[in-house]
Length: 71
Image (cartoon, rainbow, N blue to C red; front, side):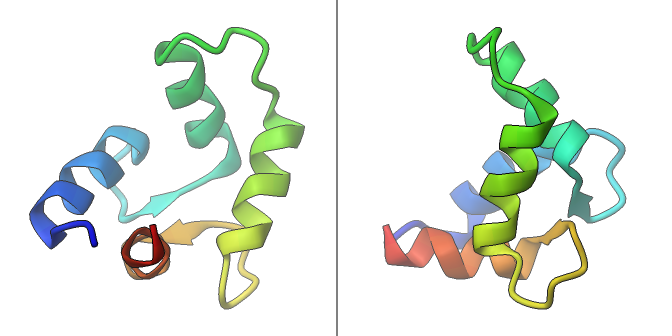
C-alpha cells in the first residue's frame, strides 16, 4: 500500500496548476515529461475515466489515493 505522503508527492507532480485536480492535459504532460513522448490527451482521458469515481472528468487526490492503495 502506498503511503499518503508518497501518494501526495506523486499526485502533486501531475497536478501542474496546483488546483487539487489532475486534468487529462496535465496527466498527458506529466507522462511526456516522464519520457512517453507518444502519450496523447485522448489516452489520458481514457485512463482518467477508469479512476474518476464521480465522473467529473478530473482526478482528485482522494480518487488517486484510493487507486494507489489498491496497487
